[in-house]
Amino acid sequence: QYDDVMNQQRKIVYGMRKEILSSESQSELLEDFMYFLAEGLSVDYGHDKTATDDWNWDELNRSLQAVFHPEMSISSADVKKSGIAGLSEALFEKLKGRFAAKKEELGQFMPEVEKMFSLSTIDQLWKDHLKAMDHLREGIGLRGYAQKDPLLEYKKESFLMFKMMDAQIKQEVIAKILNVHLAPQQEEAAIERFEEKMERDVPITMSHGDAEDQPKEPVRAEPKIGRNDPCFCGSGKKYKNCHGR
Image (cartoon, rainbow, N blue to C red; front, side, top):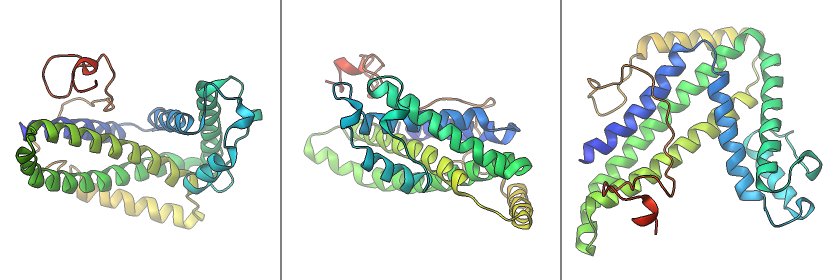
């Protein structure tokens, strides 16, 4: 049952990776990433019951400039609709605008740059996640001494860890692409090195050595749990009526 949790996560990651490898352009996937990031920032900095002029724009802009691009900024004038939804829409447009400028700057190299950063980031963070999951599994047995179900605790914590990894992948991929600057000769050399590496590394093993059950088709899924979704514990109850209470 512990392995089932890892296999489900591996299939999601492998599906994302396979889709990137098989697609000439990552535009649609990366727009999904930007939409996700805009939603997250809007929840952190926006308010439905407070006027936009009263929001902490300085803190939001410091965050945007530290994470995405030193010249990126937003103000209340950019928000056309009220509340969190309005801020999310404005942030999404800002990210798309910055991304379009980078695409124009890199020209023909943009598709390979997108693929290079997407795959390398997924691979590195997945490896880090595997190590963290190993540590979690090693220590989870101690929960039994505290009258907690070790398997249930493992499912719950591994789900949260996977969500964090997923969010980090999206943020790092977009940030790396927006901040890349290569001279023409560097662009070609970097892409050649990446393509050589991919020829050596693919297919990579996305788990602890067992790749037999890799999915035949790409899996597009994000680890989200809603109030009306089935609970992660496998009880069959809705999350809101089980561990979401």
